[in-house]
Figure 1 (cartoon, chains in turn blue, cyan):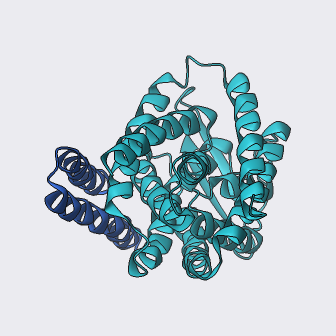
Figure 2: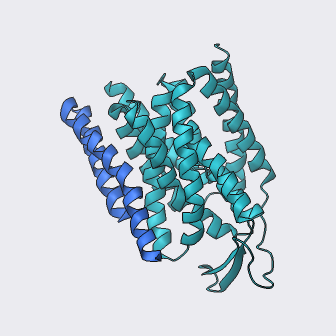
Figure 3: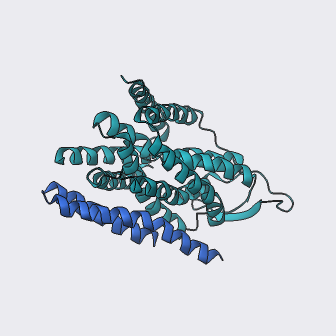
Length: 55
Length: 274
C-alpha cells in the first residue's frame, strides 16, 4: 500500500514535471496536484491498515 | 518557470543524495537551497520539502516493513505525538514570518551539526524482570547476523513527549524529524539503533503528511516547485541508498557539518534581513 501510493504519486509528479517542461503547464499542474493528494493520502491509508492489522 | 523547475529538480537530486548518504534526509538541505540559492519563498520550500520527506520515507518504510525491521507498536504509539506535533508545527509555521522561520532553521542546523559531531549511540540495556507501566518487550532479527535481538521500550511517556517536539519541528521547518526521533528512541528509550532508524522512517511519512495538509490548505504547495522537488529528492535518495556502503560515512558527516554551518549562517543572515 505504501509503495503503491508512493509510486503512483511519483508517477503523477514526474509526468507533471515533464509536461510543465514541454509547455503543457495546466495539465502538468493538474497531474502534480493529483500527486500531492495521493502522497498526502498514502500514509493515512497505510496507518489505518496497520492499526487494523495490529488489532 | 522552466528554469526554476530544472534548478529545483537538480537541487533536490543533490539534497536527496547528500542527505541520504549523510543519514539525515534531504529536508535540512533542500529548504535552505531552495530559499537561498533559488529565491523560493520559505513556506513554499518547506511545503515542497515535506512532500519529499513523505515520498522518501514511505518508500523506505515499505521495504523496512517487508523485512520486519519496524517496531509497529512503538511507531504507532510515538506517531500519535509526532503527528499532533506536526499539525501544531504546520499551523504555527503558517503564522510566523519568513525571518523567524529562517532564524529557527539556522539554529536547528547548528544543533544538528553539533549532534552529528558528537555521534552518540547506545547499545540496548539488558532486560530484567517484567515490563512496568507503559514499557513493553519486543524483538527483531538483525539482518547482518541473523541473530534475534530482544529489547525493552523504556521511558515511553518521556519518548512520547520528545516525539511531540520532533513532530512540531518537522511541521515547522519541513525536515524529517529523524534528527530528534532516532537519538530519543536509542538513547532515552533503549531501542536498538537499527529499529530506531527504521521505526523513525516509518513515522516520518505520516508526520510530514499531517503538517503538509495544513500547508496544502493554506495554498503554500506550489506544484511547479513541489513536482521537481519530490521527483528529485526521491531519485537522489534512491541513488544515495545504493551508494551509502561505498562512501566513507565519517567524511560525509564532516562534510555535512561544514555545509550545515554554511547554510546556518546564510539562514541567520536572512533572518536579520541581510
